[in-house]
Amino acid sequence: MSPCPRSVLSYVGGLCWFLALALPPLAPRTHMSENAMGSTMVEEQFPLAQRALNYARDFAAHKRRAGGMPVGWLQQTMWQVGLEVHTQPFSRTLPFPDEARERYVLPGTATALSPGQIYWAKDIIFLVNEHDLLGMEAWLEAYHGVNLTEVQSSGTPGRAGAIQAAIALELSSDVASGQPRGDHGLFLRYRIEAITLRGINSFRQYKYDMATVGKTLEGMFRKLNNLLERLHQSYFFYLLPSLSRFVSIGVYMPAFGLLLLVLILRISLCFTGPGGHGDAGFSGDGFGLNQGDLGWEPQPGLLALVPPVLICHAAGVALYYLPVLGQHVATQHFPVSEAEAVVLTLIAIYVAGMALPHSTHRVLSGDSGDRGWMTLKLVALLALALQLTCLALLNFSLGFLLAVTMVPAAAAVQPRGPRVLLAALLVLATPAVTLLLGIFVQRELVEAPAAPGEGWQLFLAALAQGLLLHHLHGAFLAPLLALATYPCWLLLWNVLFWR
Image (cartoon, rainbow, N blue to C red):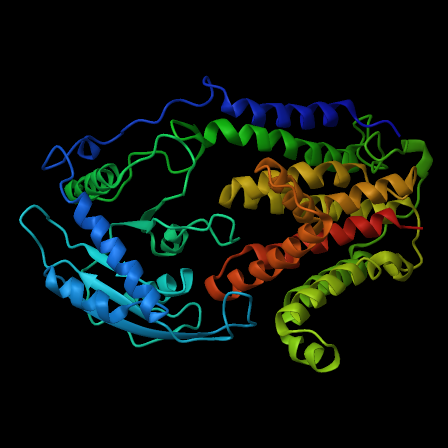
């Protein structure tokens, strides 16, 4: 079949538009949109740089001596500088242990509140927590009186009212750990504006000293101190191609819209056909068939589509629930750890699901003609278009990546023509293969190429990390891929092997 020129043009146009977002005409320079965010320093320089470095050295020494968070030293030091100090013990049972944590986590969180000073109109909360995101999540849930992630906590005895904004500091960070990029994401569900500042060991000749870092932090705190209302005059949805330029939603969404137009064109061909006639549609210069090839076959009812749709979504439900629920059974019968059992079960279900919908068309009330697979493909295209549209509004980067990989395969798949080539294209478009290839590409970009074995281990670690992030912090990526994207991909796989 020859691909529809409009679909190819739309797809290429979407990619070109996205690549052009880095150009200055489409990416204006960042700027201040609120006068209160201007310069508000009390002193021209930050005079406490050496004192901050001394605190950092003392903290590191006590942490090494204690073999963990030096809670006692933190309490004593904060009391000495006049802060009100509280500690919050918490615990969390992990769904399965990973390399960095045991199944049972029993840390403590140290919290300090500023008592109010001459130049401050608002209270400042200094929070030091253990176990990264777990500690931050435990404190946020206790402070707001909710329990969303099954964290067991004693609550927070100290309070300072509604939180206006948050600044997370990671002055010593392992950027290759596979962890989320900062604590700021946890504040989103509480409608708190947050940002993470990360210190990275650099080999560059010019580096920022503690005086510059302190001046930046003090300036940010004093700017927030001057605000009488929440941040609302800026752009709420934007991308940052660089530190000095941004792209608003009205500029970057057309790139996604052009990719989505490919699916819309294919869906419209299912109804109208190339000549614009409605009835015997399902034709297609998009599907490789002409209107006359179909004849006047009786159109299958909607109930005929129930078996393949149910089986595909049942595979997605199994992919979501069974890896964690069945880990104990796997460890009893195979020489693997709990974390390995979860990941290997996940991969086994993912691959086994490809064989399930392959023969579901046999139960379609005796209808094995072209209208059956075309109707099923129509359902898959509608589901995929809806998923990608909703996802692009929540996470544009993820939505655009899935659109780039899945749209061509979804548009081209059919049970006729070069089936081996289409099968290879569809396998490459599956989210699991996209993740695996993305790991190798990322390592190439950071100039640290990964061997096949190392890349596979990173892939397994990424799968385990994705499941943990969902169960611990409510990340939606794992349920999205298992319950929505994977069943949709299985429907397309069913279309490819229709007989």
